Amino acid sequence: MTTEALTLTQWLSPAYPVGAFAYSHGLEAAIGAGWVNDGAELQAWLSDILTDGSGRNDCILLHTAHSGQVPLQDVNAVGLAFAASAERRREALLQGAAFAKTTAAIWTTDESAVIYPVAIGAAAATRNIDPTLTCAMYLHAMMSNLIAAAQRLMPLGQTEGQTILMALSPICEELAQETATATLDDLSSSTFLSDIASMQHETQEPRIFRT
Image 1: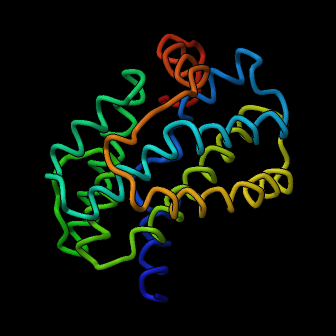
Image 2: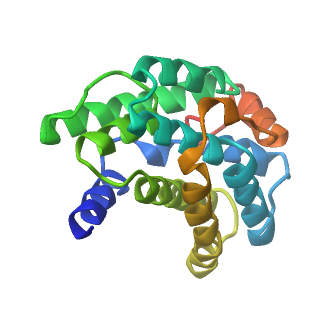
């Protein structure tokens, strides 16, 4: 378990070269539009992404890729179909390609060009890393990255940011467990405002983030 946790910590570290720091998942547009103004609203926004949007879906895709019961490219195609905007699609593809390339060079894993959660699920399977632990840490890293993005866009202190991450951590763990038996048929999303923000960000000027 220690080796698994250390490997996942490395894969999901901000230092791992996937460029996660460049993506806000539409949060930049949401903050610019006045939809997210403070820590409480940020926590609610991120909680919805976890439970009703891409967080939950990414876990299902990761678990499915890990199981090997569905061809990897089929899982990838379904994941791409659920991308709500061109930027979301690009965010998932570019991070997935960067992760696969680096991980294959170090651990001799599959270098297939697939979206980020699918790439992580496949790599975790190759290294015999528990998928539920992988999902929980993937979601935790995702939330940490988005909180860091928010801190560059709005008045949000380091302590408040870490308090929000602590509050979201149990949700990450619960989702990782709940989606362990889910299938691609269970994919869904109702985070419409987040999706709209992602679409609007495509033409936002000026902007800091790629998405």
